[in-house]
Length: 429
Ligand SMILES: CC(=O)N[C@H]1[C@@H](OP(=O)(O)OP(=O)(O)OC[C@H]2O[C@@H](n3ccc(=O)[nH]c3=O)[C@H](O)[C@@H]2O)O[C@H](CO)[C@@H](O)[C@@H]1O
Ligand SMILES: C=C(OP(=O)(O)O)C(=O)O
Image (cartoon, rainbow, N blue to C red):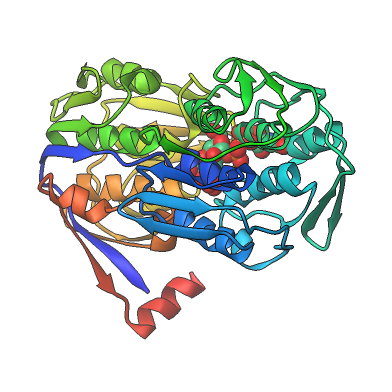
């Protein structure tokens, strides 16, 4: 087991190139199950979620090659192998195997997913969608059993705007008979990316990126080549780090349109942000930053996945900020750790009240989930002294080459092996 060590306080300067989007990658890879010939996806991030999904495709009989960010999937010999346990529990997005396998084989057995613990994360809307398409769905000992004689298009209104349910229903519906209409669909860029891949495979999808998506089922889907979109959450994390601990940071390979809510909030605090076609400049180091209130919302609102690192940044503002998470009720496990570093933050219900102008100090902290990890790395770069971050298995789910990217900008950050005593201490904490 390893820990990250950060010697904070050095102002960062330089550029960082953003990798392919985790939340697209984890849907694009299962989507390849639906094709009858080879699919190539370019620009995938080198993160553990991607490696686990590669292993899962191989478990069901796929031939997969993954090198330099390019994945070649030969789905011809795949079978509907039950996956009730094991690797499916290690990530949230294994739920996309339900939609993809149901779509291709009309049956699937998939264990309930893992992923970040952020409060309750039900999948009732996914199941509602599968049932509307004609599947029988049961939950037996923590695994979802899906079976259909045939899938027939349906009109599905999502009671909750859900990224996962929108994509999963698209996956199940592209090979169904007739028209499916998803109403109150999520509009995240990753949904458009998955629809683009499916369309290149021969699917007929209209309206992805709006709240009504229409899918006309086709008989079969073929192979294709697809380039993934850049990760707006990774980009946002480095923008926040640039604002919190940077002098001048250039974010390369980013779609500025995807970043509008964060750009607006950073500008409100007084950080200088400039954009071009596929780059964003962040000029940090302001003497006084204004406090701001932030509420997480579905896209194009402020993303919940940036709430935690943004909270670290706000400890620097000159006054009190209120950060409210309307998507997840319990996405505040990073706060106790930030307090260890000297932050003055109270949690009231779904809000974190951040009293600013704290001088953060290095400390030993533990990442409880992926973006808590990003929040602690941000805080470590801002703090005086050495910060040690454990729980790296969470960070490795979503950030490729984190230390390398930060070191290139002048950060002092490295991994060290943990002693048996340290591992025991972390496991018992
Ligand atoms: C792999 C992936 O893409 N993960 C992202 C995806 O997660 P995920 O797809 O799991 O998140 P959803 O958009 O589904 O969840 C949004 C909200 O709806 C609720 N809900 C969801 C489904 C359902 O059937 N019933 C229900 O009540 C959830 O508890 C949550 O409060 O979108 C989240 C919200 O932007 C992000 O934080 C995650 O990074
Ligand atoms: C919550 C996240 O991921 P997941 O849905 O994969 O757990 C995230 O990316 O911040």
